[in-house]
Amino acid sequence: MSIAATKQEQNSAADAAQIKSAIEAMTKVVRDKEDVMKMLFISFLARGHVLVEDVPGVGKTTISRCLAAVLGGDFSRIQLTSDLLPVDIVGGQVIENESKTIQFKSGPIFANVVLADELNRATPRTQSGLLEAMAERSVTVDGKTHRLPNPFMVIATQNPLEHHGVYPLPESQLDRFLLRLSVGYPGPEAEVSLIVGGAAELAHDKLSSLSPIWNEAQVLQMFHRVDRISIHQDVADYIQSLIQATREHAEISTGVSTRGVLAFAAAVRARAFVEARDYATPEDVRALFLPVCSHRITLTTAGTNARIVADAILGEILSNVSVPV
Image 1: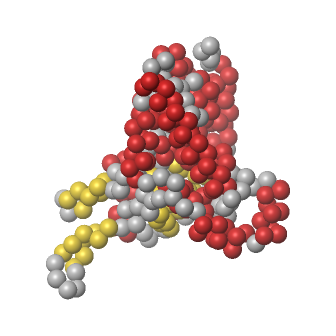
Image 2: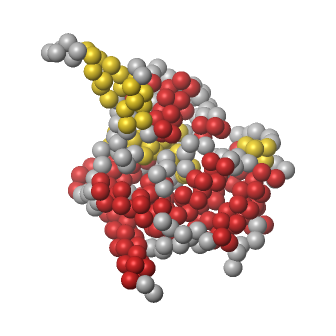
Image 3: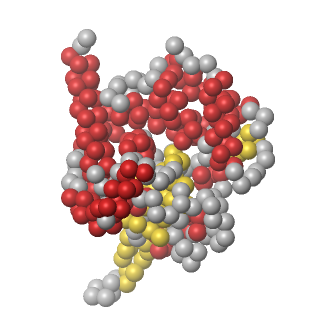
């Protein structure tokens, strides 16, 4: 084994240990959600955004704040409503009182971790403004382009059970999200501890105690190392076979796009990195197939349980496609 390879393995182990430490620190604030936090790190390292579909009050905001705290980044929360305009998110030109000059005033999108709460309550125009910023990582106001911070991640939420006064995202916009997740309720033991300890005050105190584990330069170095994770030909063939199956399934009218394939590969690399490996495995692929692809397919028949049906179909595909040895 070469010296370079040995050093790369040491870096991978050190990075994975730091991520594990960060997740442990976050679970002291929000208990029983290690899997969700791990998925957030995977999306962050793959430079993707996350759509969280869940009922209110399960800790989505607190988890997002925890991620920003351990990353040492700025956090911003945007409450989406039907009267919100794109300028309220990206910012706009204002007249400075003292100089009487027109200057750009940045909106809440200019943060490292942005929580876009109840995304489907915003009008399509406002949704498109947010999603354009996500895709381009910049905003253009009056012909001038303003770059968003690097790193930059959006965690958008929506309640899948409410259908009054909402504007569902079309498939082309859902495709902008790397992962779709659910936080879910905590387990009975964790919930009892919240009752005894006083959840709101306890979470606030512990959140303020979180300290950054990385600085910006270290985060950018991690991005570079994630990009170097190897995907063997057999694993790449496995990814393509799964994606092709979504395009040929009788109950799916639109399968995963090429953009979805590239997003899938990026997520697989990020998971391998989190697991302290410099190569991807079929297990990385299987673990991410549903959260990466379930919102990227269109079913032939629509229904109120579309997500459940989509997950079931993808589970069937996962069972039927041969796993490389």
